[in-house]
Length: 394
Ligand SMILES: CC(C)(COP(=O)(O)OP(=O)(O)OC[C@H]1O[C@@H](n2cnc3c(N)ncnc32)[C@H](O)[C@@H]1OP(=O)(O)O)[C@@H](O)C(=O)NCCC(=O)NCCS
Image (cartoon, rainbow, N blue to C red; front, side, top):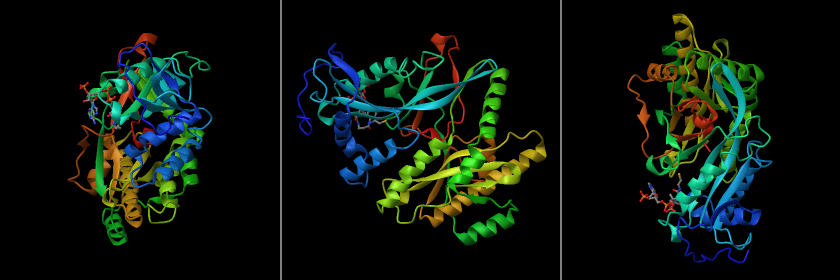
């Protein structure tokens, strides 16, 4: 495209009627990536960053039209020769909606890579893009869905809580717990001393079989159904399916291939205590320095205990899988293990391992934000976000 590397001028105001948010052509998508690479390439070369994005776009979660790149442009200009003022991506994701005892399989959208061209910042272009996107997502890719309207969308703000709230994406619980990695000796002695069960290291396929099978999916729907019978607020969740896990692992593996993670592709992707039905899946993510690389627990899976002994068994099993994560993190040269929005069971498990560990609340980065569209569909004004864990990040 003629304008590929030239910052063409724009005299359009952020509220100009000529501004339009449109899906990018493949050429424009590539151009948008080249523009935003500075913000997100981290240790990658620009070409590697484009390669990473291409690699991720080929994953099952994102391919076949699930990923859309949006650009804010002067709508009077033809495709491939219009200046990109601002851009973002949306990911269509499978999700659940539970309301008054009924669970529906729906789709939602995750918004990512919100970007305004540096020379045009502060002119209201990103804001205009979010306002337009908010309207577009009300019906985007909903034509083949039973509901012809979008129910909710999410994003993970790295610029605090104010900007996106203005356009309807409200901040939800954005907390985490962090534990250090531990070496093999520490791992073995601490598991023995605390009399924790042995957590089985799990491969990707083990995770698919134990955490992402049809029985687990049915359990998830049942849990949401029961919750929606207990309280009238609508409940939503992004489906914690195998495609989500694979997408995160594809990102990690890309960094391994490029030598940025100095080890082989890991075979262990999670841990489980089968007799307690307690599992977790994890991924290694890149930080701004090697000290900040993190092993994130993508998802914990366990049955809600009914009795006190059951509860103790579940907490110990959760502690065992977290311990295993700490040990694997050490083996991978990563200094910390983190998990988002711990439930009270997960919190108790972490405190069993370290009584001083605290839940931290984020104020600036990775603010889990959700735009609820259910009010106009008779689903009430409020919504609860279930399983707001790292797997749903995009
Ligand atoms: C964030 C970004 C998209 C804003 O684009 P923009 O076109 O300048 O945004 P607008 O002109 O519509 O809105 C500007 C508002 O955003 C706020 N904003 C911009 N950058 C911000 C930041 N890093 N932290 C908090 N607020 C920020 C401004 O303070 C301003 O608020 P105000 O209207 O109350 O004064 C742009 O700065 C950018 O691309 N940054 C690099 C990539 C990035 O961080 N994206 C966000 C990922 S979650």
